[in-house]
Length: 358
Image (cartoon, rainbow, N blue to C red; front, side, top):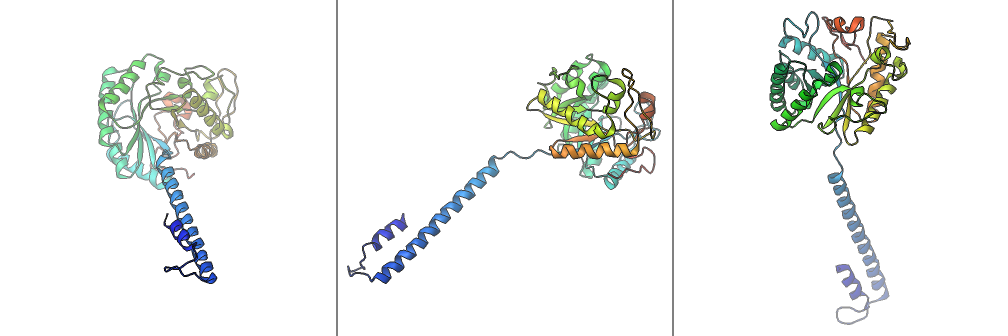
């Protein structure tokens, strides 16, 4: 507004007392006015751009955390979760220190909140490690109740360390639909307690697809905040005839394909690859598919490294989260999973717990 008034005044060609200006003065003043107008226009444009940038920063959604985690269970050496001594605090500290020192992982997924495992959260917080915490559920209702209560207490005590919660892991895989009510009871209890962390129940991708192909939604879809799927082409190579046999160099693509199917089935839900991996031994061993008799998956350190590295690379390209199974090999597992059960760790399950460098 001030610029227009000045231009109108000087356009009369007269001075303060009505005397005419010389042409040189008029030309000089007009040049000055053009410069002044240019400066004003530029200033206005800068303000507009700054405001637009500020609006973009305030309206642009915050980027979600992309997690690269390792499944953590301290039942190493002669320890077993079924009976006997509990993992000591000293052991948990030692294993977490080893994981930090020799691997890039600063996030873990845990399998229980009682029997000494609850110390893991304090130990993780002291080391600035994030945690996906699984409240373990099984066929003992009374134990489940204590576990749910302990899970609520842990979630509230460590709200910055425990970033996600799960009511059970592979409950349907182990028990069919018999304990769906326990999963729902756990989810409801966490909601009623007002925990701040997002909640799910973790199971295989096949269970989240309601055991059909193409994928169908389950009754838990409306109950959870996010979806955790476990994907193991190694075990599918032995027990499933739904998809073709998958070698190690195709495992990463297999993982991504399963995530995409579940994402399509549950639009709007974050889908996390909560378990994936490949056995590093017995070196050179191969499983046979019980239906097709195909043999394509070879256990080896090289193949384990390939699967882990290639999967995390593909996940990162899509800004998706994942958890490698597992941090430390558990020697008690062969009793349940055969010869390969004790070879899933990226770190050994015996002192000095040496880890593979990826």
